[in-house]
Length: 388
Image (cartoon, rainbow, N blue to C red; front, side, top):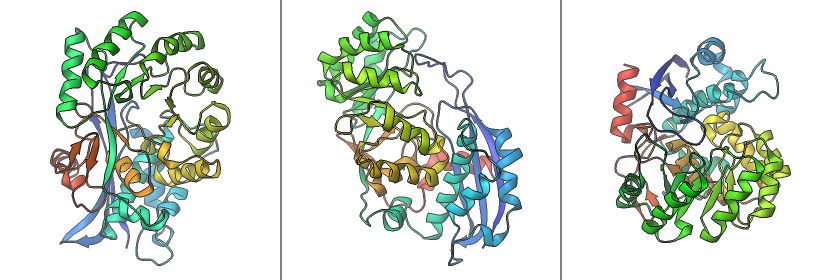
């Protein structure tokens, strides 16, 4: 049992959209394929990995550092103790050899992409959906194939008016989503409130709407927005300030009584722990959005979940950023609170298998093996084209 080929490609996921901080005109993504010598149905088992939107492709890191380390490893160094499958934990250590602590920048994205492909392989060899494998090996044995999801969108776009924003949100509701998210902070407070009010007319209740400032605000502006948002009783107010400004988040939590959400731009267990320690997050009402694919992958994510447990946080307060299938699997197998989904953006990487159904913002998975990529036609067609 061994790895026989590793490939990396860069794929554009560009769009004219923008949030309060960046536009996506030049956004791209690193995609990894890892082929093994294990055969199923006459074909070599191959695992696929990629990273979330919002971070650019990390080709140089992958091709110069991390992929060579994995290629140079010995066969016995990548297998589990039984020798009947690959060990994500051992492979993670190989990838991180000679990497200093701290500095959790783009390297966390590169490792996360490879790690995703390894978990795809491991669960395919086990002939299980990843969520079932995770529940049995790392959870309490229970899993579900139905999880909460919300539709993320509401970006700023050239010429996009209130009617276009409403049309977008209506399209998500037509797909079965009752909870949606929109961007704020890219316009004036008064204009943002008009945009919010227009969406509330559709979703009917503030608990069905999340707003995301993408780290745009200083403390004064964050509190000002909070005062305006508080009467609306929104599901959450997301990433008001810089993700590493834990003091800002803590002060905001003292001034805003409703739910806050943050964490998508924290890329390690240690940074996530600092948020819990110093960010003023309230374990009964706030939400954590750590993204597995951006934060060194699932091996590190398991450490983060254990850290939360050690600090008496429920895993159900975690709803990952990113909208991809590894987070859906983690949510279903390890009892997270749900997952973000981009129904019309960053495709075909986001979402879930084609036969999945969404009703009242809960998605049900059809039967699949591994991560489920082979059950998403547009995605597997792209992957097959990239790595033929």
